Amino acid sequence: AEADTPPSDFTTDQLLDGLLTAQFGERSCRSRYEFASYHEKKKNASHKPSPYLLAKLRRHEALQKRCGPSTAPYRAAVRQLKSGKGAAATDCRYLVSISYRGLGNRMLATTSALLYAMLTDRVLLVHQSKHDVAALFCEPFPGTTWLLPSGWRSFPLGNLRDYGSGSRESLGNMLKTNVISVGAGGNASWSDGGDRRPPFVYLHLEGGYDFHDKLFYCDEHQRLLHGAPWLLMKTDSYLVPGLFLVPSFQDELGRMFPEKDLTFYHLGRYLFHPVNDVWRAVTSYYRTNLAGAGERVGIQIRVFRKKQTPLQHVLDQVLSCVRREKLLPESTSSFSKTNASDQAVLVTSLSSWYYERIRDEYGGGRVAGGVHQPSHEGQQKWGDTSHDKRALSEMYLLSTCDVLVTTGFSTFGYVAQGLGGVRPWIMPTAPIWSETKEDVPVPEPPCVRAMSVEPCFHSPSYYDCTARKDVDVGKVLPYVRHCEDVSWGIKIA
Ligand code: GDP
Image (cartoon, rainbow, N blue to C red; front, side, top):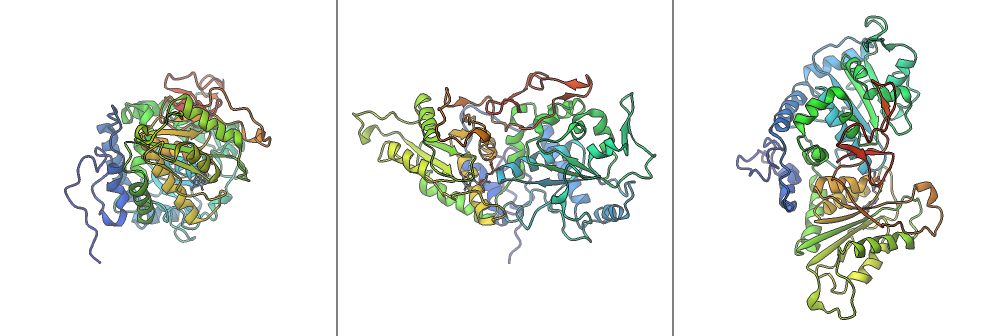
C-alpha cells in the first residue's frame, strides 16, 4: 500500500484555523481534515483558537511523541513503576485517563484529561477496555499513540477499572492515612522525604467522591501531585469548569482560551476524529438526508430509563418547545406544500416512537427536507462496538445541525452541541429517580436556551480551599455558573 503521506496544501479551514496539525495523511483518517466541510462556519461566529493555544498544542504533541509508548523514557518510567519507588526516572510524567459510562461521558472525561495533561505537562494515555477507543477514534497526536499499552510488561498496574474510592493509592486515602500531608502553610509533602512515596497516585474523581478526593481541586494538592511521575485519573465527567476554579491554573487557561466558553469546542474538535467507517456512515447519511436543506434542526431525545416505553409527556415537551420557540413551521389549516420550510429535521433517540410522532406532525412536506432518524437502538448497550459507532455517528450528525433541541443532563447532547458550536434549546428533565411515574407534567418553560455551548460539570467540589469551607461555586468567578439543566452543576458561560 502507498504510504499515507500528508499533502502540503491543506487549507486553513481544513485545519480548523490551525487547531489541527498537518502532519497526518488524509486517507487513514478522513474525518480529521473533512470535518470542517460539514461544519461551515455558523453565522456571526469567529470561533478561532488563540495563537497561544495552537503553540501549546504543538508543544504538547512534541511531548507526547518524545515520551510516548515505545520510547526509551516510557520504558524507563514503566520500570520505575514496577520497582514501586516514587522517584521519577526521567523528566517525562504521565496521566492515564480511565473513563467509563456511555460514550458521551467517556468523551467528556477524555477531554478533561487532555486539558489537565496540558496544564501539568503530562503525557496523556487513554485506558481502553477491549479496543473501544481504537475502534472509534483516530490517533490525535502525530508520530505516537495515545493508547495505553496493555499487558503487564508495558503497563504493570493490573485492571484499571478496579480502582475506586477504596484504593489505597487514591489521593483521598493517602491524605487520610498521612502518606501525604499538607502543612499549615499550605506546603504539601510526602510524609517521609520520598522513600515510601508511591510511584503513582490514583485520582478518584467520580460523582459522590468524598472530601479528601475533592482536594484535587486545591492548589497545594496540585503542587504535591506535580511530583508524581504517574497519575491515574478516573472520571465520567466534564471536569473542565472545576479546573478553571483552581487559582494556579487560571492564568494559563485565560491565555489558552480567551473565549473561555469555547474550551470544549476547541479541545473536542482537536481530539476526536471518528475512524473511517464511522465517518463514512456520518457523511453518507448527511448527503442523503440533510445536505439539501437550508437549515438543519436536530432533536435529541434521551430518556433516562432502562425500559424505553414511549412517554407521552416527553413527546409533549419536545413539541411544546418546538412550537414555543418557533423552530419549525406552525401547522395551519391553510398549509400547502408551497409554504413548506426549507428545513430538514434529524431526530436521535433510542426509541423510534418519538421520531414517528414528530414525522406525523412535520413530515408530509411541511418541512421540505423531511424528518429523519438514523437508528433506534432500543436500549443502551455496554461494550458493544457497533452500538457505540452508531452513537458516535449520531453525535456528529447532530453537530452539523444549525438548531439543536437537546435533553438536559445528557452528555450525548453536550458533545453534539460542543462539537457543533451550537447553543441548544435544553429541555429540563425530571430527576431520574422520579421518572417512574408515567404522568409527569411538562415543565414550564419546556426548554431554555443554553448560555453557552459548553458541557455541564455534574459533580463539582464546593470546597473553597483557601476559605476552608464550602461555598457557592456558581458565584466564585463571573464565567463559571450553575447549569441550566443541573442546578448543582457548573458550566463555563
Ligand atoms: P448520557 O447517558 O445521555 O449522558 O449519554 P452517554 O453517551 O454517556 O450514554 C448514553 C448511551 O446510550 C450512548 O452512548 C449510546 O450508546 C446510547 N444512546 C443514547 N441515546 C442515543 C441515541 O439517540 N442514539 C444512539 N445511537 N445511541 C444512543
